[in-house]
Length: 291
Image (cartoon, rainbow, N blue to C red):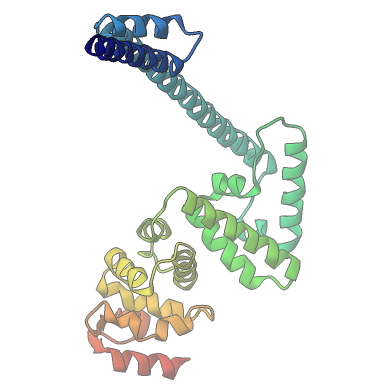
């Protein structure tokens, strides 16, 4: 009798444990999702819910690829809109340049004329919608990027008006920021300024130096780039031009300016009345003598 009681109690314990396990599994199941309920039923019957997993994977892929396609479409649309805006702006600036009837750039950037140009641009923009032109863009349309860069610096050095000097410097800053935003390198700006012509060498050197400072390039990079573009045989002429510019005279006398050319500079005869190669010490002595 005792054996039957023990057996009966053991069977009862097994049944209760099984029931408790099943109840626990269903208590952890999220409610209200027929698909999940079906998956648990399949699990109870020993069937792996592969079809359900496949459906979830496919839905997830559709959402991911659908979202990526939609994003790509939006980006393409915005890029196209920006390109159209830039094209329209260039066309408007060309039209404005014709309307303003620019003359010689030196005369254009005088104190009286620069204020007149600013007012004209403001009037033109007040009549337009979203697309606004800039004075800088209009000047570049008429005179070219390099022409405007050198003319702005020459005009700033020549003016006696502090207000005009600030206006011209603001245009210079705007132009260099445009170069930076477009990803122009120091080499690219050196090429743009075209040091092969002897005109405005000191101003071009200052523009290049200012831009190198803006994009955080070292003097070594500046001078090695300059040598690459103008050649060692023309470097002396560039330095001679830089000596004439108060803003760059110290830079031209800096010892590091000669480090990239192994201690020698070939000087152009017409520019210095000296021919051949001279040592850096002799070149610095010459510059000290003529300053």
